[in-house]
Image (cartoon, rainbow, N blue to C red; front, top):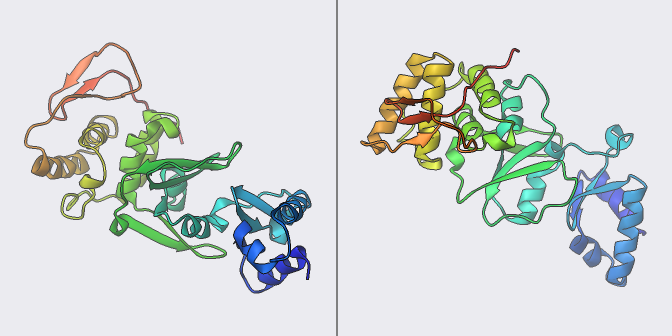
Length: 266
């Protein structure tokens, strides 16, 4: 049996991912260089692709023309291989929740520190937390497995906290408005939601809900939850990326207004 035959047999059995180590164990007489050469040729022939160093995915016929397999096809298997918690996040999670009006260029994945070795030209955009509260996640079936993604409230908070990954707070606010029919901030302390982010993020989100989206009901609920853990609020700039003059101070959320947020037209 050749390595290509072995790959094909696994695909028939529904096993669509493997590692260099798997191949070496299946072909113990092959030298590391022989394994590398065979896998390199299989990649060149669009039989497999390598989205992460040492981790390979069989390219199914319906993706063969482009030679690119969407990350949702293999992300759960990859994170299992890396022994890392994860969830699909940011714009990709918003798309799962029906709140992204255009397909993101990158597939956004949140995982835990330490940071991973990232390949050049990867379609994966990684962000990191010290830990992940799995009770805040939802799941959906992909072609090959079950994929975890952030629920609407965690997605909204992530969009604010990691706004540099999505194009800024105006885009974040646009998507948060779309998510607002699904978000419920009651119990955000008890369920661990606020503990999963920073107080600055909650304050910025609260300001956006109240003054940009004019959703006073949700803003009030979030404010009540916030004050349970922060009787006194420190001041934070609305955008941590802008070194511009503060034009106004929002006393309720203790936010220094240093940018103007505008909702995109859908």
